[in-house]
Image (cartoon, rainbow, N blue to C red):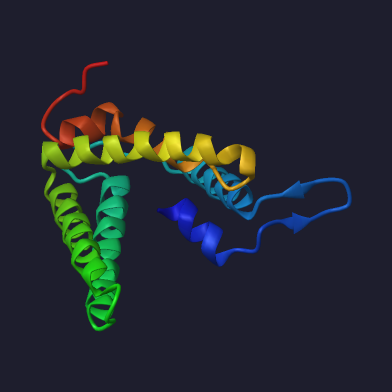
Length: 161
């Protein structure tokens, strides 16, 4: 979803003298560098039963996506021809909101769905990569993060490889 948002909102590329870089890749590199710098100075404390910060961010993100999709669905319902799509968009929005609530509460099914969505994101990004529109870095990081031991412990168990 974030990659699609970057593709819609960002300019296609930044033109440099010799190399043209995608904005999504630059933003991922900056965000990853900031995270590494932060974690090098502030070691995380993995307290049992505490919600990890990354899970909180992912839960809020999923909830916001759900709310936005429900609002878009309501707007679509007022259009004569494509109004029926509003029902489908609304159902997806309610699903994302429920997913965000499940992530916030530490439900195991929510972790599994997020891992599945991350794998789908990786596949879609790899398919779009030759066209210059795909960026699997965020999805790869999300899949890696959701499999971390302290995150799996928050969701109630270990994930087997």
